[in-house]
Image (tube, rainbow, N blue to C red; front, side, top):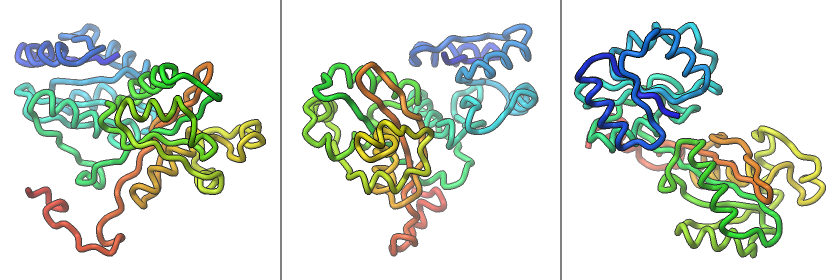
Length: 270
C-alpha cells in the first residue's frame, strides 16, 4: 500500500492527481491524529509520499526510524509537483528509483542527494525452478517480486539462473515473452558471491553445488554487468515450483574502467 499524505488544499489536489496514476495508492488528507497514523503506516512498512515541508516529515518519523535495511521508502513532494525528494531509504529501499518513476508521472524533477546520484543502477533477476516449470508460473512469480521491490519490468536488464538450467523451456520462454536476455552461470561463478546471500541452503548445495540459485544468479549478473559490488534488492521469494530474487549494482566510475570521466555526468549538466 502507498499512502499519499497531503496537508493543504493545493497538496490535496496534487495527491488526487497522483493517486489516479499510481496503482495501489490511497490519499490521506490531513489525517488525524496525524503523528500516530503516519507513524503506524511507517511501522507497517507502507510506502509513503508526503506533499508538505520536509521538516514536518522528519520530525514526525524520527521516533520510529530503525535502519535503511528495514525502513520503507519515503518521498517528499512540493505542492506544485515540481520536485520529488527521496527522503529515506534512497539506495537500500529503492526510494531513489521510485522518485524517478514518480517524477516521470508528474513531469517533475527527482532531487537525488545520496552518493553516486548520476549513476543509474543495473537491476538483475535471478530465478531457479523445478524441471519443466511452466512459463506462466514463472511469470506470475516474477510479477509479484517486481511489485514487492517497487520496480517495473523496464528496469530489469536480464533474467539469470545456473548453467544446468540453460535449456529450461519455461525460463527461456519467459525471457522471450518479456524480451529480456536469459543468461546462465556456472556453480563456480555463483559461489563467488556466496557471502552476499541472505540465506544458505545445504539441500540446494548438495543438489546443484551452490547455496542459493536465485540470489546468487541475480547478484553475479549485476556484478558482471557493472564491474561493481552487487547488493540484494529483494531476497529469495519462493512459490510452489520456483524461486526469484532481484539484485542491483551501480556501474563502476569511468576512471576505474580506464576511461575518461564524464564531467557532465559528474556535475549534472546536460
